[in-house]
Amino acid sequence: MNRVEININPQVLRWAREEAGYDPAEVADKVDIETERYKLWEKHGKSIPLGKLKVLANTYKRQLAVFLLPTVPDKLKKPKDFRNLSPADSKLSKKVLEVIRDVTYFRETAYELQGEAYWKARYSWLDRTKNNITDSKASTQNFVNF
Image 1 (cartoon, one colour):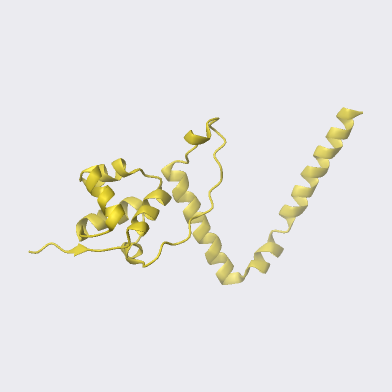
Image 2 (cartoon, one colour):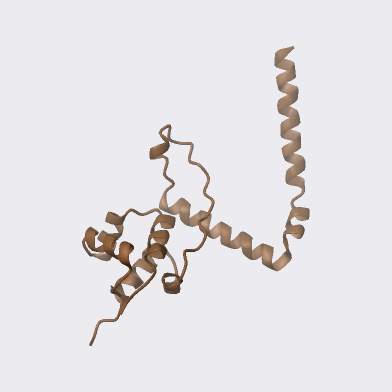
């Protein structure tokens, strides 16, 4: 049986890896190839075995069809991780990145089903709560300065 090899946009492969929070060495280990070979896939996107592409899709928790996209999808807005004092080391875990992606998907789906105006009206109490917290802080600050 012949092996099926696929050519993809290498930027999509890199995007999927970065969005999932992996570095090339980790991915190469999971796919059971050399790191240099994986880096070549990200550089050229040529001759990737279908079986390995399936493993990558499973690792990144993406559908296989994502790797066949002609252009790179938008990156998710990620919050800053303030738990580490060094900005270079502030990296969100793979699980947190997965949850952010899931929540973003659910939010977009809810907006498609009901519309953004519906959800803003339904949760307008959050704005009142934020205002109350801000007012409380201002009152406390004035009391301390007195």
